Amino acid sequence: MNYDELSRQIQRLAGGGGNVASHTNCMTRLRLDLVDPSKADAAAIKALDGVLGVVEGEQMQIIVGPGHAERLRAAYDAVSGDAGSAALHINVDSGDAGPDPAEATRAKVKARQDGPLQRLFRHVGNIFIPIIPGFIACGLVAAIANVWKMLVPTVTTNPWFGVLAGIGGILGGALQFIVGHNTAKEFGGTPVLGLVAGGLPYMIALKGVPAAEGAPAQPLTIPLFGDLAPGLGGIIGVMVTAWAFAVIEKAVRRVVPATLDLFLVPVTTLLIGAVLAVFVIMPVSALFMKGLTWLLVDFALKTGGVVGGFIMSSLFLPMVMLGIHQGLTPLHAQLITDHGFTELLPILAMAGAGQVGMAVAVWVRTRNDRLRGVLKSALPIGVLGIGEPLIYGVSLPLVRPFITACLGAGFGGAVIALGVQADPFGAGALGLSGLLMIPLITAGHWLWYVVGWLVAVIAGAVLTYFFGYREADVERVYGGDGAVTALDVSSGR
Image (cartoon, rainbow, N blue to C red):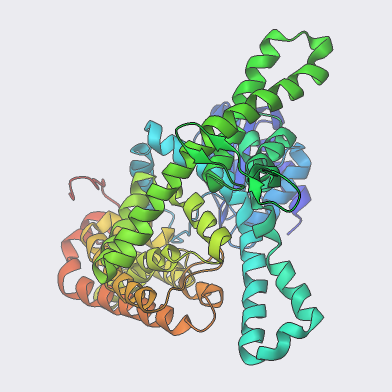
């Protein structure tokens, strides 16, 4: 496929570069947000070599298939002169030319995700999604180093082992700067000031200064709070600080003459932002992080044990539906930064395993060719941790399988929680799920994760086979002849 030529033709037929407000990609599609959809020639785009289909609308979705979508988006970046955002949505097509249950269900779910809280968490997602490739790369390198150390304990004296481990730790050491940069960019501030904002809460100077030579450092103290320390407030503190920098920068720019902008705006932003960060944001963020960690890790997981693991795994997919799951990303990142892994992520990953079990049961029971076509595309990548096609294409439209998949996930989460209670472990990076998470699990604890995943798959399959599948639901969604009737996810009709 000639991606450069195809992207030029797509831009021309979409109404020109001025008619494309933004673009992104998913697993199978290039997505163009159009200013005026009537200016786009969908039929002509569909006829282009390499295009498998087109979904019309304010966001035109050009289906080119797995592997091609990312490369086409990169080519479109060059043609448009503007880098598109990272992949935010995952979609697998059923291959049927008729209406798509996954798209219809996705539209209904997304329509319910437009409250202030959901919008806040979407900002969080936009900040962290571009970092995920780095999490995966560094996490896998760190995993290789851990395996090497486990097989050859004396390898720690080998200088090349230090190099390998250092590569795996690069992102962890620079995470606050990257998050600050991305936060400023997300909220319209100057990215380099966001980078500075990311480093501010981690300054070594916040430890205090020695009272006298050879004496312990005299700490910096905040009234009503106590002593400061580098990293106080964690990644959430960095995000809030960088957001505050963006707000201050915009406010200062409105009152500063253009001729003095370069000199006054950055330094004023930095000084005001630093005072606000040190005296307000860092202390408050530290209390928030401490409370969130206590609730989810100490109370729900370590104290709640198997019950806490069951509840968290069972509720994760509903959190995805509500659009609030991205709110946990900073906590995962902070846990990885603090002690090398996040024990929450393997538990929440069981939600995908429950969906896999659900899909196996539906495959065994159904004879509907269209539903089988969806499963054929969605199940293999579901095993690898990409669960959205199974959610929006199968379980959620059918309703009951969604419930049994969530409950099946709970059993896997209970197993993982039992292992964490016995000897804490977790995932050393974000971005991978399903069986692909195995290399990221803390060395020596992979078996707990595999057993939990298998338990979730089996439980999801058994519950769906006996309680979650109804032929009437399949007829309602996919129709006996392949036609799709109206979906009503909220009522189950």
